[in-house]
Length: 225
Picture 1 (tube, helix red, strand yellow):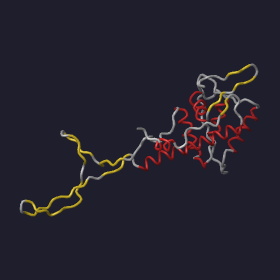
Picture 2 (cartoon, rainbow, N blue to C red):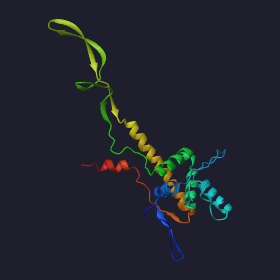
Picture 3 (cartoon, rainbow, N blue to C red):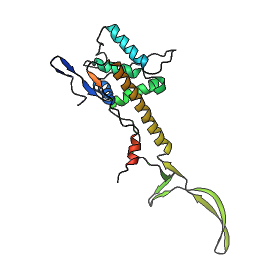
Picture 4 (spheres, rainbow, N blue to C red):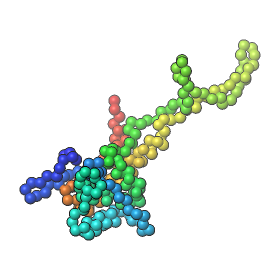
């Protein structure tokens, strides 16, 4: 079912829209235009999602049922479920990246993107420098020493040249990209667990569906022919 579709009802029974956590985040931030309101710094360190859910539940109870939406979305109403999702994301624990990760999750959801884990990237040995002229390209070289050689009966000093090389993309770049994907995946897992256990959404049901875990492992195990 499309994330653009509206909530349906059958008689008096409400039919909730079932969305995986990534789709729910994209609906909240991209479609509903929910905003991330990060909490002020606190002296007390909270771990896990207990504080986030507790805070949202208390806020909802204090308001008496409905969350007042619409203050952020220009020309329209922000669905209260979208604001609850944004409130949970805003309270990302420090153990998962805290505010920085919350912003990352929201930005990716708003853009409808998944972190770039550099699919298909393989380090290749390439020259550090490429020289170009009218005759084409050649690898740049540097002088690494001199040698005495016998040429046409005479001893001459010649330069010993070497071609510096590097790996591109560097293995550290690939590792960093995949570590960032893994951190994002864990953050989505925390949001998913919070939304499911908190049972605070009225019109959306967050399912157990998650983005692929370590998709590079699968692609490396089944290389294309």
